[in-house]
Image 1 (cartoon, rainbow, N blue to C red):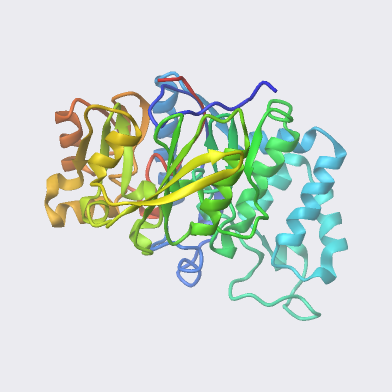
Image 2 (cartoon, rainbow, N blue to C red):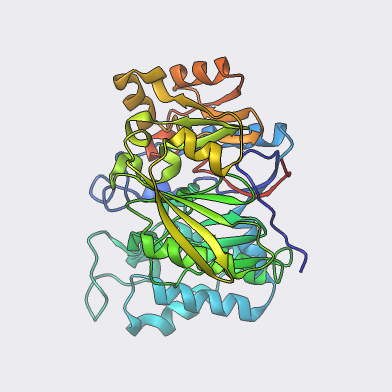
Length: 406
């Protein structure tokens, strides 16, 4: 099988990347529902779109082909009537509507074009959209006016899956309100002509243990870093490791599992630790330097592995398992506790490497950017006035599909 995906590092030159331009779903978040949607504030959609367009233009100017989630999903549903009907059935089963209304909802969605279905699913379906005036008559009640919630977090394309080598780990999301986000990658890889039959599956959306893409880092073609976090549990890491180690063509033989605090400000490993160049890493020292040990999962055979508690320092650990002579750890905020905390909150650690030693970062994180540049890393600034308020950075907003080897 010739794979449609190839990502063996965090820093190889980015050739193809998946994104979602924020849309009307952001306008469906209210002060009453923002906590439920995992937001700290209400975002201004038009500015968020302008900021995101600048991000995409930066990616394209650096030679990356940018693919939009909505376009891929629409093409996948156009591939066959079976794809469209299966998508609608799956979607309704995961929705907030009562099963009493499945037939009516099926007719409602199948009357739309494929592109309209995708947009409507993302924006959410209100009772008024569906033509129901009240919550009565057996319809499931909700705290918000939506019968099918919008997906305002969808512009963070890193969360619903992770690319690993020639395959994907599709996320089993921790928060139920985000479960439906994974439906798009599921149908894109199953039905889109560019991906159908050309992608290996290392984790499935309906597997029971929660795991999210922001916790998975391709530290090298042989080594994964995974966060044990609020949203990724140990059993999921065991399952993912077993699946990868069962694939004799996979190059990964080691998983480094970092246990980070289960807090909103460090929801994933990539919010406190990212790679920016050969042997160079940006870290939130207040978290990474307080991890007492790291679990090392080492392949021993077909689908089997040993687990060891490693008490080396982070620098020693990376030098050993990445087989490098030198590791450079760049602290957010220059080690200043206040500056580091402020910049980490604004996704300073969540850089996206588009080539070795070249990263995209939010413009507001000036101290961390200066330190990156002093370490020989080129920083490309993007505006962050609105996007950062969603608590995610350039890495969160992107899902690499193809990177050059390093």
